[in-house]
Image (cartoon, rainbow over all chains, first blue to last red; front, side):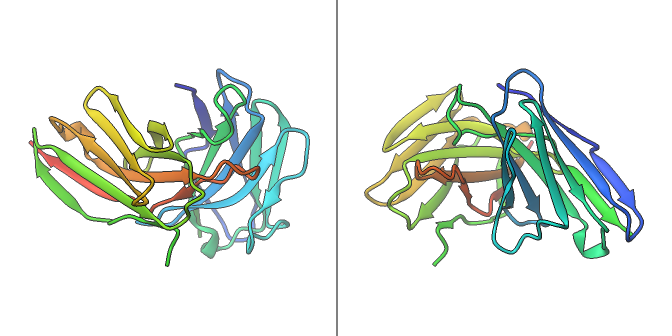
Length: 117
Length: 112
């Protein structure tokens, strides 16, 4: 299967700082990447969809200025949590898809656990 | 009514048992159905992908889709302790937004 690398796997930061999470497709070109948030014992909540070279499409209720998404190349998307607060602590997961399989098949990264103190 | 309903479990079975995991859905537009396995503190891993109604088998795993009943299943034969994980169903209508709708996931434990 396709490999999606997400980094870092774990980050602890102070309230008010910004944190950047990277998502890379290692063996394919990902025209679309998705960012999810997952709370304990809950399913994945889609935050935004990003297509290479264009602005991300955010889901209702997700603050664009707080969760900055950049998809600058076909293999890299980044999520920056700006001015993080304890309520932003969560498990963030990216996924990537390719025309090779159709955009409805998504391959996921291993996730990033963010803890804001 | 939620679009996708999935019993969260937990489900505990002995090694070697046949496991049945299920989801129901309300949106008749869904055409593509997936099962993901998620180990603790890891991202989901695609297990099975099916289009429309029917069965699909891959090793010890069988996925079934019954669109008339809006019901999908994942069967695991000869379950192993390594199958212990959360299983998420996901589905998609084929629209242009490419959004997957996930179930909440079922936590499975296979006891040696």
